[in-house]
Image 1 (cartoon, rainbow, N blue to C red):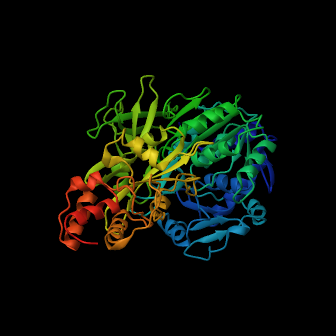
Image 2: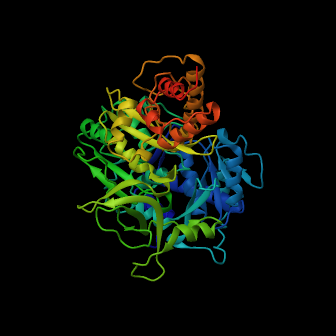
Image 3: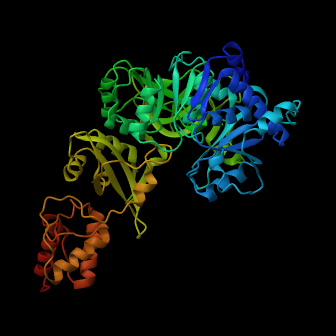
Length: 594
């Protein structure tokens, strides 16, 4: 593949000049108008010193004008970098420095805070007309720069494991492989795509170029955050036929009700694990709509595999499906050997969708983009996703969890994905997330956050009891909290960091009615338990193990009782009467008076 995004779009404009390409709150543009305006802005960029291979940042709200900016950057031979307006200024400045950005394209409302830093801010407007009067002065690519479809189209920054963001360099060929002649969604020229995702996130790649490179129409949602009712009203009024939602937004949209969307023929969701219950409800509510689960890291350009659902899912998880065209997948063990079907292994992606790597980070690139030992052509690479999957008998893939979701609790290795799968398989559970919360003592404990299915009120106590029948004791979360919603990041994924920081001081659900401790012994023991369990309000009759205690903690508490009162308490006595009142009785029995 030797084409580029801008070259293909120019051909679409020549073939269908009067077809509406994009419309938003700031107006609509035909394909001819879009291409011409982008060409004029590209001339302005070249006159401002932008050279092929440069990175040009965009700081703007959703609009038709923002699409002109994207296309202009590509026509100038540069790569675009979408900035997230909600990110902290320090992080934004770090990204701009890392990408060596010298020009920032912005709209009038987004220039706040862009007050220098070694780059020029351009607000496109009437000056484009003046630029159009000047002869073209496009510089040739500098020595060593990439050309054609191998040129970098955009840079998308993702969170790094070290806390420093990483810029993923995505080439034109990878975008074309995603949206041109696809096998997971047949795009028609009569389609209208929703554009809602921020340009800083790769969901926008499918939205924008999926529409424009296939001669369809792109409907740009109004700028700013929309309520779900506002978003769905826009989808209905604009007769959107193709819509992509993050998993978190998809779940919420289903909860609100996906009704009265007669023009929606394809609904795609992804970015995180989809709830079986919500997928089934979406299929039931939208009988004429294909619902697709899309999986893929930014490093392999939005989607690696997809699974389209037209009938209710009867399994415990929604498959992530098979690789899309132009992509291959390998399921390998830690020695890069293929694993048998049905066995878990790490997913590696191959093919045209691979990014070049991480900007200015050759070490991390070499670590994640490795040589493919099974390639027919020497030198081909594969991307190590870090995700654990298993291939089912029908060839589709099932997502298990993150490989780096493995945590150590009390010396035991635990895959949080396994715990999440066990929770979501329980009756009345819609969604769940499990985090390992680090406490002041330095140790960590598993905490599960559960969203109940519609009309259900799952019991945290009952869920922990059921999990003890499914999981090893060390993998049962110390706390299970039932919540109305899971917090989401700006790109719609579950915000695990926010869950790890959440206050868990509230007393969990237990069988015993609350009774305040009485006397010196019960009060002292409740204080010990609070210190170790990490929450307040423990009652004198509360069960230690229902509160999330475990054998190692019990041994520690027995040692503290010995230090405090000079008595030896048998672990058996502790286990037979595991409450502060019961432990106080054991202390009294050992010879300490209240």
